[in-house]
Length: 176
Image (cartoon, rainbow, N blue to C red; front, side, top):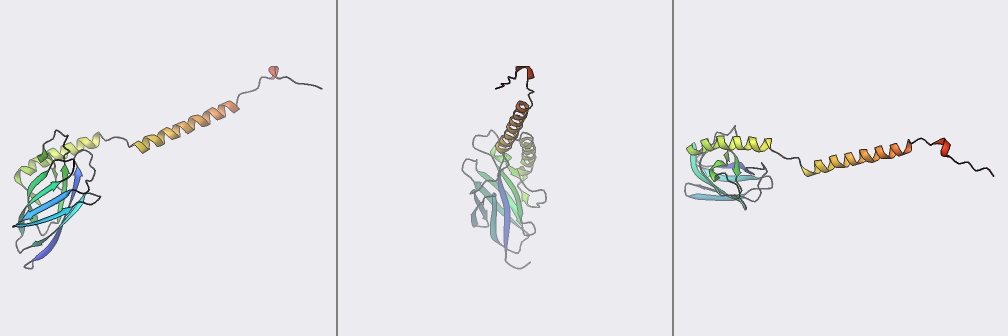
């Protein structure tokens, strides 16, 4: 590896409960006396470009802040071999979950989180599977189903009124 190398690390910030990306979250990485600040895009993805020296790992502090969510802080080890920092799940201010339960690194990531973070990974994984089970049906799908049912009923009523047989005895014929 060269003496100094510029590496871009990627990560994603999502809502713990809704599993939705969080845009415009402030991401701060502090390492070896340096700080890098960036913001997440519409998909909740952030990119941190740092100068990596000739060591294999770099100890850093990752902090994330977003409106309506509890602040996130974690010690991480950055590796020039692994550029994916994984997902960080933020907990909203109204949630009863502790702010330390929002760590979920991607399964392929070899980025090392602090020792207490591995225990919270398990909590975050079980919480995310529960929220996927309790997911709701989106409103547009409900509206589309209701419209189809309405059309079916309207067609059925229209066809049933056309098929009523005439009572021939009640028909009046006028002869002039």
